[in-house]
Amino acid sequence: MSQFSRGRTRKFLYQMLYASTFSKINDETFRESFFSGIFDSELDEEYLKTMFDLVVENEQFLVEIIKMYAPRFDIENMDLSYVLPIFIGATEILIFQEEIPVKVSINEAVEISKVYGDDSSRKMVN
Image (cartoon, rainbow, N blue to C red):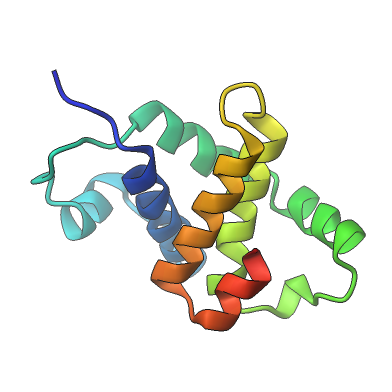
């Protein structure tokens, strides 16, 4: 029986969201390009699909929430390496609060920003 890796799935989710901002992506082609499947764990497919759809569908809502609680940040003009980890973390906090502890969502958003962003993106996400 294979083990799901939420951390790996979050990173793959980040890559899918990033790619989808530039063009419509074909899920199968994207997976072949970025995920070889040769890992000791598999993606959490249900979480991946749910989160991708939620982030895309609720983008404007997430922007408004961030504007409300962090008015100094110009979220609409920020680099994606800053915004996407925040979107992923905020979606988990708002939607999956029963399943995923808030602290885990924040820590994972910071981890994603460390992998795909620079030091300032980590600080901003934190």
